Length: 297
Image (cartoon, rainbow, N blue to C red; front, side, top):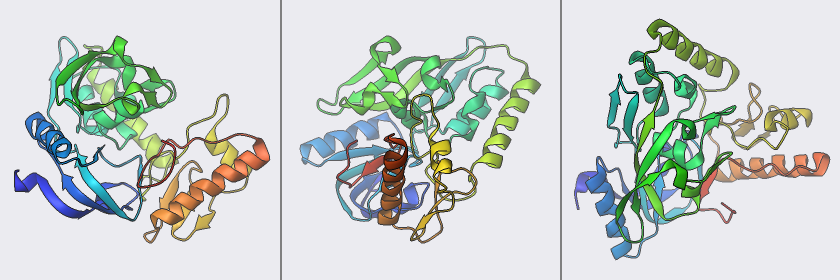
């Protein structure tokens, strides 16, 4: 195996935006589909559990030894934009802010909202990430995947993918996302698109603690309600456990004050859930994926 993309006992804290994580038994950053496919095949042949991460922006990894192979897709970042047709082909590791800015510069409409989401395309499709009613599912044509069991590569049409609020069928099947084909509206006003994209980023940075290590939103919004409002109502803004704190800027964000452990963060998530359940009768479902915890996915 190519040594450059494969290492043992890697510290995963540098691969998550909240800067917390354990040690991966095996870790790899494939740069293309062939390397990605080879790694999944290698994990299967050696009977290693294989877990895939993107930008680590929606991820809590326990401070323990994580057995098996962890693959990070961030080096798979080929992006091809056809400005006249509006067709975009992007690999799983393309960052959403990169995609958003590139679309605006090519006068393609519909991706301006994604500029403030610090995740990858693959992660965004997997989580059906979005803001308000907007998500990439709206622009999706098809997704290229690897079947983790057979190593076969397939292209799945959008109609065959189940998308719901912060959910896609990739969370419950055996497919690893390689790339996606999307369509955005061509011939937009260049200055307007660039300005809207800039404004969206400014709004995010002014209302959310983007300058500090965090996940992004911790909890899904319950039906007809907002997680941040429920947490606010409990007076939990600024509440801390160890180095983990509920942001005073936006209460659906947990920040790492440089010394948080995965246990601190996990306990803080649990305390929020318990308080809201006891006082409001609402169970807040985490948006954050967890690795190395006995927690329902």
